[in-house]
Image 1 (tube, rainbow, N blue to C red):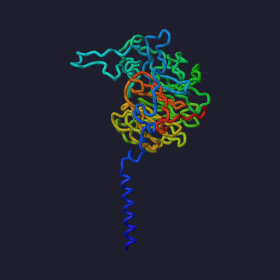
Image 2 (cartoon, rainbow, N blue to C red; image 1 turned 60 degrees about the vertical axis):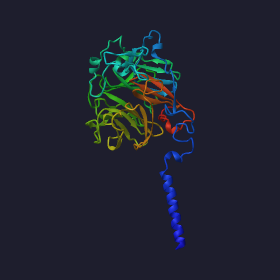
Image 3 (cartoon, helix red, strand yellow; image 1 turned 90 degrees about the vertical axis):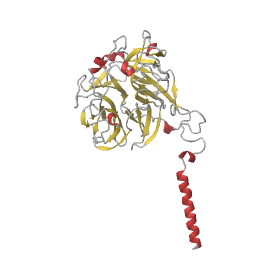
Length: 427
């Protein structure tokens, strides 16, 4: 009996110790200085930009081109890093190159109202830039009607697509294609294409353009330019692309469309799926509103769709069968795009909270970072992002009207970095 009591007491003691340890704050279980910082053991400071340092004054401003001193970038739509020394920048034209105004009282609006406000932006590039209106449900023809400026004074349609090197120097100008763009939305290279064709999605043109690697030739147009629709030859304001390893292509269609369209490697239409939902929180599988982002897991062939207006990700097999999904959170959440790197984690940008969000492929939330603002390193309206082979991270911002480059901090925990892309056809 005495032995039994001793054993029982020991068992209870062990259980108490285990329970007490499990109830301790997570921080207390870490070694001193380790915590959850991007750089383990860092003393002082804070992870303002996550695991990155901002590269200031990058890239070269378009105003530095001879004869273009009075103009700067318009709304930053997309960025794609083919490699650290060839980075594509996609903008909606240009805006006047004006310095930040001095703060003034605005008595016409009310007493004690001042503009601009310290640390806050003074110009919203996506509203100011051509072609004007572009939100979900709007017809492309509405843009020029609602835009109140004068072309050549308040904005101009030039330098939509440029290429810069690692130092941000402009090395290519694809100005010959400005005339076929109306609202270029996304630029990318298929990682499984050895010829490295350059793809541009233009949502107001309802078209997807495929260019040669050097930009000298337009080799294919998918969709019927300026004509909206929802079949094998028409889109309704498409937004993003993603590929399987055999170059099967998936199109997020789109701002006004409510579907995913699938094409073979040659651009032949195969099938589509998706129905119009009831925003803001439709929970029915396959019902979508503003299909604004798409990513593919090359191993499982699962297709991850950003159902933007319903604040959720929907996951399908490659033929459109719904598998599962998760919510990104209700207002102010406003997810813009999805990305799956070679590490098979999913990253998204939330324009509503100005944060990069990391999830595993089952939807478990893992990490977030980012701070809102138009200062160097702040986020304001990230509409595109990319990673190069060195781990440098790039963002394009529609609201601040710029592209930014971030470099991984020395000693940063790799789990805090946005994963490098899949490079199958080249390194």
